[in-house]
Amino acid sequence: MDAAPDTDAMAGESVVVIGGGFGGLSTACYLADAGADVTLLEKNEQLGGRASRLEAEGFRFDMGPSWYLMPDVFERFFGHFDRSPEEYYTLTHLDPHYRVFWKDGDRVDVLLDMEHNRELFEAYEPGAGDALDAYLEEAERTYEIGMEHFVYEDRPRLRDYVDRDVLRYSWGLSLLGKMQGHVEGYFDHPKLQQLMQYTLVFLGGSPTNTPALYNLMSHVDFNMGVYYPDGGLGAVVDGIVELAEELGVEFVVDAEVTGIEGRYGAFAVDTVGGDRHLADVVVSNADYAHTEQELLPERKRQYTEEYWESRTYAPSAFLLYLGVEGDVPELAHHTLVLPTRWEEHFARIFDDPAWPEDPAYYLCVPSKTDETVAPDGHSNLFALVPIAPGLEDTPELREEYREVVLDDIAENTGTELRDRIVFEETFCVEDFADRYNSYDGSALGLAHTLRQTSLFRPPHRSNAVDGLYFTGATTTPGIGVPMCLISGGLTAERIADTIPDS
Ligand SMILES: Cc1cc2nc3c(=O)[nH]c(=O)nc-3n(C[C@H](O)[C@H](O)[C@H](O)COP(=O)(O)OP(=O)(O)OC[C@H]3O[C@@H](n4cnc5c(N)ncnc54)[C@H](O)[C@@H]3O)c2cc1C
Picture 1 (tube, protein in one colour):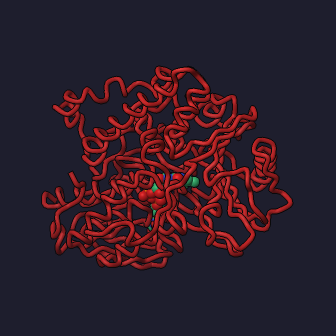
Picture 2 (cartoon, rainbow, N blue to C red; picture 1 turned 180 degrees about the vertical axis):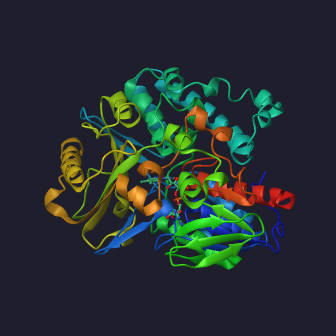
């Protein structure tokens, strides 16, 4: 299934899309391609949502996503419009995929070369090379079945699951257990378990709250590989915006929506500047809770404030963008620094929220691959520490935490940065809330716990307002750039299928 409406299915319909993240951009493309007259209103000065760019003093930082994973999803997205990603941006296959430092001095590289990876696993635990093969074989099967039958196909009702596919593939039964137990079934060594579980940070979950079906992320990471679009993830945003313009989408930036009135065929969408946009259909890619709680009157909301308060949110993040003199030879393009007390890291996010004393973090150095992101002789680097959403975030706390992170980088990767920093900026809980209207300052939205996966995520179609739809990471399939692109197709398909009964 293509997860997109047929050409001309939307002819004659006018649509306002609120928010220019990947979900909003994707929905706009599909709807314009299906004949709708689409206007996209974005609050901020640039498009891309969490994939915004920060440019200063010759450095260009991707502020959010930096891993280009699941290249097949991008190919399928552009393919729907008879285009290919290469027409819009160039990809480099990264090797190593990433480097891992543990804080006991140990360090490994996960490479493109699977023989190397097998030997790496074997070195930690006899038999782990074969276990890796078996694990990845299952992850591949999960990916293939999962993508075709559960990701590209929207199943908003329970009865959509009680059908032949679930029975035929016996899919979803053992994989509904927790990731922790699943990985322990294959590997005993805690470091190998961590290598298979770190990908959960992409989903905003922990090994004890995320279902094992997300083992598919290891297929994504080991088998499919890690790519870098030249110019950074911002180049992908530019590519999709260019495609949307070719399809006729009109963009308005600096246009924060302040209210949505009306219903199918007669919507009025107001923005801060006092402009009013009329439309037959409205799609919100803005944070779901923000859209319902702030932009709609109470009687038109599907959920109460208590509902949003009771959800499990993916982490927020402390981000430190650094322009640095010279090279950072110890680091790879993608580097993870993992604490030996792994459980404590997740507890600080999900169970007992606090700024982590012994942080797990990710370092991104795109200047290793792309000389356009930093001035000559400099490195472009950012550190990302996942932290609990809603944590107190003040300039003083950021200043203190900056020191913790710089000390940790020096101690555990051997990279001294302090005397070489020529540009720096932080981004944290308050910024996620202010810049993106993100609930509780979460970086990613609703976590992928079992009770917030698939049909348990908020729906694409509002049950309270005819003609109002939602797209992006809070809906299905969920978090991550590829998932948001698919979400756009699912939302557009749902609109094309349901508007006639309005
Ligand atoms: C730090 C970080 C690192 C990440 N790393 C990766 C990664 O490496 N790989 C990956 O695949 N994914 C990654 N992700 C996740 C990925 O970026 C997100 O899941 C995805 O970009 C979210 O897209 P979205 O469609 O939900 O929209 P968003 O990006 O949330 O965009 C929503 C848009 O709506 C706008 N908006 C909000 N309110 C209003 C309003 N009232 N009026 C108008 N506009 C409004 C916002 O300004 C925003 O532009 C990362 C995310 C973060 C934050």
